[in-house]
Image (cartoon, rainbow, N blue to C red):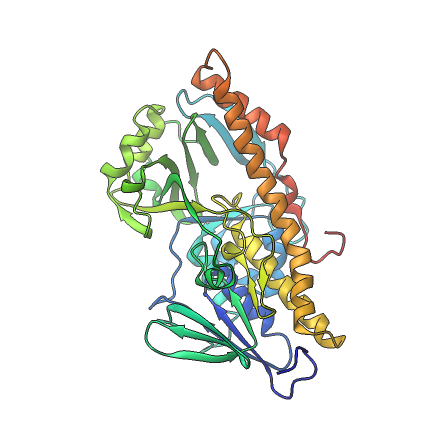
Amino acid sequence: MPDSLTGSVRPLRIAIVGAGPGGLAAAIALGRLPNVDLHVFDQARVLREIGAGIGINENTWRLLKWYGADKNLDAYYKKRDESVIDIQMRDGLTGELLGQRWQKDSSPVGPPYARVERYKLQNALKKEVPEGLIQLSKRLVEIEEKDTGLTLKFEDGTSFEDADLVVGADGIRSVVRKFAFPDHKLSFSGKVAYRVLIPQEDVAHIPDIPPSACFWHTPTTHVYTNPLDEGKFEIATRALETDENAGKVSWGQEATPEQVVHHYKDYHPTIRAIVEAPKSWLSFALFGGPRLETVTAKGRVVLIGDAAHPLSGAFGAGAAFALEDAYTLMATLGYARTHSKPQSWALEQFDEIRSPHYEKLYHILNTYEQVNKEVFAIEPPLDPSELVKLRLQKNAAGASTAWIYKYDVRMPSN
């Protein structure tokens, strides 16, 4: 096949690896291009999303509307006004309120903020994907490069031949990324996230639970609580773990209460009671890696979502990043097709748009890391509550995140 999106007599043969939010968004977006032969592969036997809640901000709503999936979420959130607290920050040891933000409905595309269960977002996108497009039980183990294209080999012994383009939407442990950048290595962050959704009635007896999303901070860990719509209550935590205890090879591994509660024994009584409520948890060992200088390779591979930005945190906007990637890929391929540009040009344009965006995200994380080192280096050592307050102040002053949630990838100025 010539390196052109207009010179081929056959459809552009695209393989999307991964059917999470990013892969599903790519299936919707690329499916709107003419003359494509689209295939989606996922390793799961049953398509489901592991996790708890997920935030949907203005940038996410804007793209969900473009994907046609916003209507599939209407039943799962309440429209709110400025009388509602958006989020609180509290001292995890004393319970002191350190700050809060009120919700303001300034978004023209949807509610200012909503939080839904992850699988509901995934299902909302999946409803817009043509029936039968997704192939399950396809665990990718190898990619082979040939003159005629890329061959994907799966654990079940089957293969997919002659892919003109492979879209790696296969998450933080991306097999596609390993093929494209074999020297790129992930490392364990030393932290594990424990997450769970439980009925609100399980915590109804606990006094002083904030009525909104709330981060409870200590110098080394935090707990996030949020009473969701439909009577659910979300708890998401961070804890320091050794390599041996992290269960690093597993993602969404079941954890017992005993594995979790001891990390928060010094917290405020409200949080201790909340953390003791669940009968089981899911654990997520947190990995990260250095920023990729480019998210495309070999003129035939492009990474999107967590595969493209192996961050140890995604600012509560990981789904938005994946939706932005998929939209951008569709736009650059579509432009190349209508302007007689080669596929390699389309991927270069994608890279020029998205790589600087991810560089800005890494800059924020690097700033937070530097601030953390600074406050821990102060002599004499700060009281834990003073350390938390100073760190929050320095983080806010050093690296704003507000732009992330207003960002519109469709605007040329971005």
